[in-house]
Length: 166
Image (cartoon, rainbow, N blue to C red; front, side):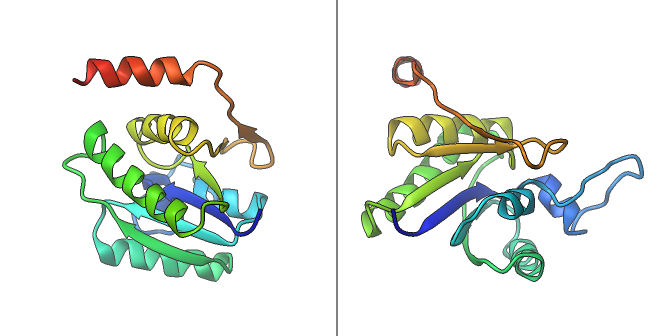
């Protein structure tokens, strides 16, 4: 395989880690899930989908590059809400298809920890059914433990969800 890309949503915990959002005193944020993944695994590029303001995503990207030297591609996603499955699906699917069309053999990992549970669910469905890619999650308490998800029955689940949406 050639280049390794991590595709991730920009989540609130990542923004808090970069001091771009207020943190409650009792919160232990650490590096945030994105920087945690980059420090644990080796990637050539980070493709960061976001629905926040461009300036916030840009500032986060600059903070991230200071902490971990990686090429970052910012991808603006237009979502009505961060839990709108349809908008999330279209934004992520469009970006993944663009990546795969450019280089069909590229190694893509989808980061499941940042963003909303809806974003993680759509990432799982697209990752395992559309492009057959690795799905990664890093638990904030166990930075060194990487979970690589493999789901046997996703085709049935995907079909059921697709049918229910019609």
